[in-house]
Length: 371
Image (cartoon, rainbow, N blue to C red; front, side, top):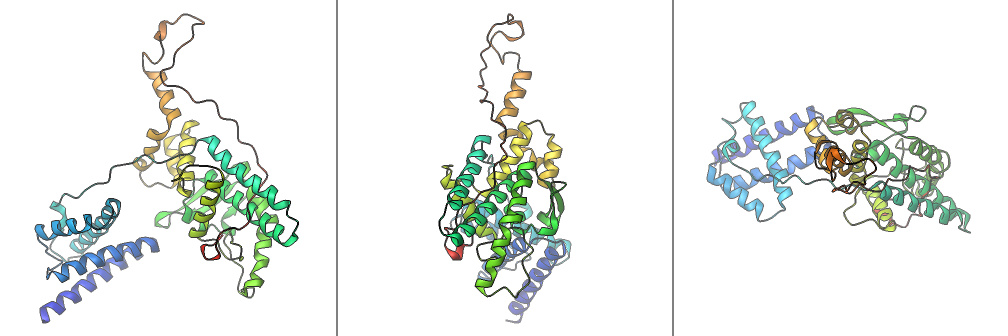
């Protein structure tokens, strides 16, 4: 029994040290929670089988893999194994265990899927939906309802424009604060993964949408704090607020953007992250350098950014037509004036971005979801 208790104590101490190391590296709270859950469940599983976590056998690890594969999705298996491997590498490095038992175990890898992206026309349709909602809100006969609806519409336009212009993750969008905005330079400072700071660039439509929201939308939302009894607390510093005048969280952002997605008739599966994918793809389509896109996205590795070179149809067509000797019928010897058949059909040129007036719908979501 004393050996069992000592084993449990060593396990708890190793896990605590591992999580402390994550915190010291400025890992996000979400990452720390996910790793604590994944590694904690793994260690509990080993303890129930009477297995020493420092030296599990190959059959033990394969049995755990089988248990995971039969209970959770493949993507979740990959995420849990990444946390467990990180824990064992840490334990070996710190001298808490003789080595990494997972080093010799082949684990399933997730196939790399191409990200879903929107066409420029679809982004325009999303923004046009917000325009329409602003018109409806402005026409309301109830002044108080109109004020709230207009404020939310201005906010929603600013959210879409900012997410698309700067290629932000949804967590970065939710955490953006007033002190990080520099509208005269068209910049927004954000803290990305690993608490790394970068500058997000804002085009003129995004700057105009944010300015309209800050002048005519956000003050109305701040005033609503009195109705919730929180007026005495310091006003929130976050840029985007919900209908109670508090910071708009990640869940609220997802709810609002999904609502706009449905109203715009965009397909299922389009998420806030789709705007980030679209940002990167449209930059590459326009001729931006891959390393510039990497910097704007905040990717540590260029390999992560390279997926967008495969997802950008315009970039592929351009490279194909320029390089392949038979990309056009007749090749280089076509007679002047002869029409070419392009085997890869080019898309119709997209219309230039309009500078829409800011807009937004009334807050139709349930109060617990946020707005």
